Image (tube, rainbow, N blue to C red; front, side):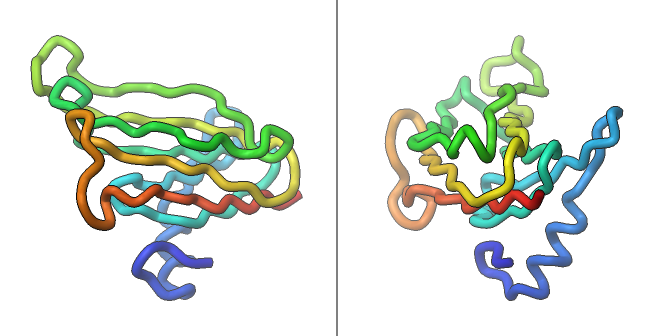
Length: 135
């Protein structure tokens, strides 16, 4: 397993810290989008959340899904916003949730932009997240 800028051992430890649980008992693995993590491993019936904290669409933050994952492996569930919608420039947490529906591997390709412009450098590169779903 590899997360951007981490060894395999460090990535395993970091991912373990990012696993939660739903009220129904399904695990939720969360990847932080600003950290540009590029790998996740989940089990069938569990969830993968892609989160960007301190996100503000009112000032121009945006994540665009350029390529959806294979729907036989990972299914988009919803996108949520937890923050102050009444404050111009206010920030919150954007979360995109996917459900693991079948064993296999797939990719999600995202691109970040700010005020309609793709940033120069690594933050402007497409973010390719490889997801392995265990049976």
